[in-house]
Image: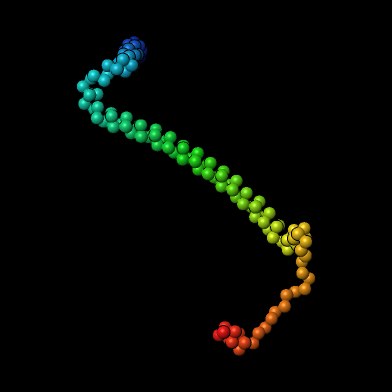
Length: 131
């Protein structure tokens, strides 16, 4: 019984190779497109081809979007570091000691006497406004 199966197997393998090679040749030649089954399903095949094109274009769009996000993220990091640098320079320039040193070159000096508060009676201010 095993002998029958062994002899039948090589015949099937040879037939399978011929069918595969014949099918491959038909695909490469384009003759499979003229068969009735393929022609009947042509709208569906075109729909599937359209979906494939849409899927590929979506992939390209996604990659471009990811690159843009990455570039924007890098720009944001650079601007943040620049902001921190400029802010630290401004804070240093606004210190009272730094301002006093800077105006010393202009011939000005910092006053050591605190400012005085001038108080005026409430009635006098009303008279001054009325005039």
